[in-house]
Image 1 (cartoon, rainbow, N blue to C red):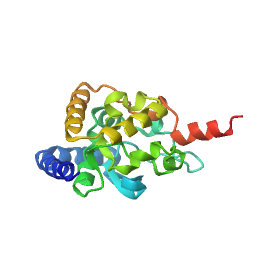
Image 2 (spheres, rainbow, N blue to C red):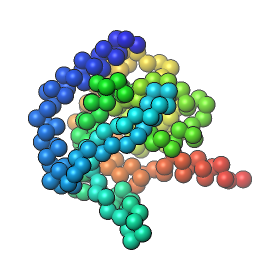
Image 3 (cartoon, rainbow, N blue to C red):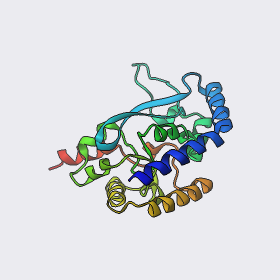
Length: 205
């Protein structure tokens, strides 16, 4: 959809210009709170499952146990990190991903690379479009939604996507962010990882 891509580029570019002072302030605060690097970078599956590097503001320390393993997310989140996540401000650098064409403003959220092999054939339809900063699943429960439902919502979006739907999702997202509704700072505290959940299902008789 050329119109969608044009809208993404224009809207994301304008947002980056208008939010430049806020982005600079947040970068400084992250630097003071967590040190370098300021940005969290991670490979995520993009359109057609091709990996890209998603960027967010860091919200966790690199604290490890005596064996050198990273501590659980909940133990590495700082107070400022919790604020960033609950306000969704940690997501703002993803606007650069949108401008580069790796993401869209609206689409299925890019999950972890290791989750892809656990998608059903139908769920793989979510990879047919660019992943989004927000999406249909995010305004219908976000981290509090069961995986089967969440992925089904993503597929529904792919099959019914339109500019009108995208605009409705963006407006609803803005309302939810302002109310801080449906945002969980530590997603692992309310739901299992998709691979753990489905691997367990495969091993049950």
